[in-house]
Structure formats: C-alpha cells, structure tokens
Image (tube, rainbow, N blue to C red; front, side, top):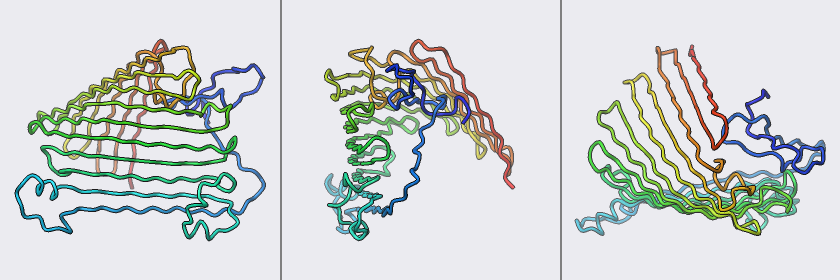
Length: 330
C-alpha cells in the first residue's frame, strides 16, 4: 500500500512500550491514512458453517381491501405502503450444522461457536410515497452483530429511528425534514478503544431550488447531539453542519457539482479521547470542506471524470486532493 491511501492513522506510542498497539491507531474520514487493517488468518483450519439469508415483504393495504371513499382515512389507506426487510448472517463452528441451516436461532450469535454473526430488522412505513407535493416516511432499524476475529468476543447493538417529511412547496422548491434517533453500543474487551455506548438525536432540513431543469441549488442544515455513556464521565458532543451545493447537468452528457460544507463540533471535555462514531470522524472545532465533482461523456465509448476535495479541519493545515480519470469502452 502506498502512503496516504489507507484508512487508519498512527497516533504514536501512547503507552511508551515500543510497540504499535491496536489502540494507537485511529480511523480517518478520508483516504489519507497510512495503514489498513488486515485480519491475518491462522494456519489452523476449523470446520465452519456459513449462512446468508434475507427476506423482504412489501405490503400495500389497498391491494387487499377495496377503498372507494373520498374521506381522509380512505385517501390515507390508498397511499400507505409498508416494507419489512429481515437479514441473518452466521459463520459458526457449531458441531451441529443443521442448527444453522434450519434456522435454530437460539444457537446463533453464540459466544463459543460464532465467528461472525449479524441479524437485522428494518421496517419502513410510507405515506403518499409517490406524491410530489408531500410524503412521510417512518423507519426503524435494529441490528445485532458479534465477532471474535481480533481480541475476543465483541458485540454490537444498534437502533435507528427516523422520520422524514418531504414537501414540494412549489414546482421548483422542495424541502426535506428529518428527525433521527440512534443507539450505538459496542461491547469489546475492557482495554479496547472500540467500547462505546452512544445515544444521539438530531434534526436536519434540506432545501432544494431548481429554477430550470439543468440547474439545482440547495443547502442543508443539521443539528445533533450525541452522548457516550461508556466512560466514567460521559462525553457529550454538540454537532452542527451547514452545506451549500449547486449542480449543473449537461443534457445526456454529464454534470458538474460543487459543494461547500462547514462543520462545528463541541465537546464537554475537549481534551478527552473519544470514539470515531461519536462525531462520525469529525474533529473537535470548526472545519470547512469544499468539493467539485465533474463527469462528462466525451463520446459513446469515452468518459472523463474529475474530483477535487479541499478541507481545513480545526487548526490543521489545508489539504487538497484531486483525481482525474478517462475511461475508454470497447
């Protein structure tokens, strides 16, 4: 791997033991780290039973009930849909493979046998989903994970609840409001930096203006608060984000997108170490990010893309990153 193309940075020998310990590496939001995480397999082989299973249900009440009224309840029933998604993954050393294949869930995510396990439930309820004037979406996600690849059993539990309200104020102005509530809990060995118990909630508004079909402009306002209750003294982060964007589309050829974003993070203890998930990798203080994305089809078999990112995070030096690419199809 070349320098600057990883997703981890090394913080230094924090415990002065002369070794690069796992807790001395930190995730970075951008591809400018110098390290990547690799799980080195052992030479000893174990029989493993693997299962990947998922199912999706989409229910529309109006398919099962004839709705003829014109009142509010009838209109709501005609425009309500529900979607349920269930997923289970399991890699296990269980001596009874039939327990896994026949979905005996009491044997799943077992501390002794499970190498990697995931269970996910997602429930969406949509009101007026295809209405351009207004729509409402309720979402609930619950996820449980377990793995024992690195330093012992590690369990993750997460819940996400959100409400999205979309309003088309006029033909050229659209707004999207969202409320998000999350629980992010990870139980790892006591000396691991991955231990956390984060509860967060936030609101955001996305305002979009399209004066002509080729041009879209807009801005996003986001305010959230996250608290990590795992430390003896809980850490609280107040986060606000403002983003401006403008997009110009070339008919059937490509588009150019420009964005400017300002993030501000405040901690109740600015000097404390905090998990990556508390602020989604954003540093304490004010940060400004700007980016330009351009893609264009020169011909049927030739496509050009250009990406530029700049950022000034807290008191760090300004960093510029650019990539250009031309693809030919034969």
